[in-house]
Length: 191
Image 1 (cartoon, rainbow, N blue to C red):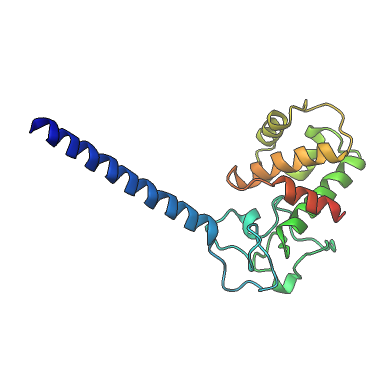
Image 2 (image 1 turned 180 degrees about the horizontal axis):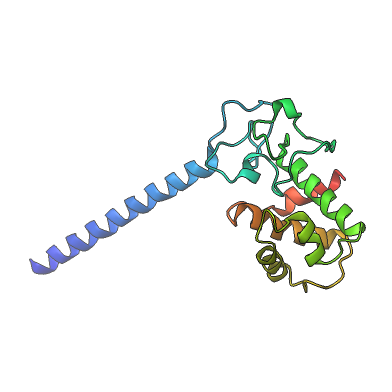
């Protein structure tokens, strides 16, 4: 009788664990499959997940704006840029797709490197100035992620730009929303 009770208790414990695991997986899949989309966003806009509309406020700002580099609003006529009158952020650029935001980031980095900001210290000093950022921490992070020496000369090759975009977008938005190989390749093809 005692052995039978132990077997029933063990089976109940296993069944309960399996049910909890199934519930956890379903909840995780719901979060991934159905991101919160802002009601104000233009339906022609595609977000990080490739779905219509900009993402809501539960996502990092650069991900919500399709702007993984958190480029500020300027007069630059970026391809895929939402016009200022449609920009709901007010400070940072918003793009019609995540790939256009990656493209803008790649172009900005390439132009800066080619204009003489050709070390991590110079590049990130311009990109994330100390008046607004922990620039030295940013440089240290990007150097650790890319394996680059902070004072080494940079040449704007595709491989370097890809490594910089990945590291800098993680610095800007956190590790949960990396720039994928596909997103980078799609963006790079638009240059």
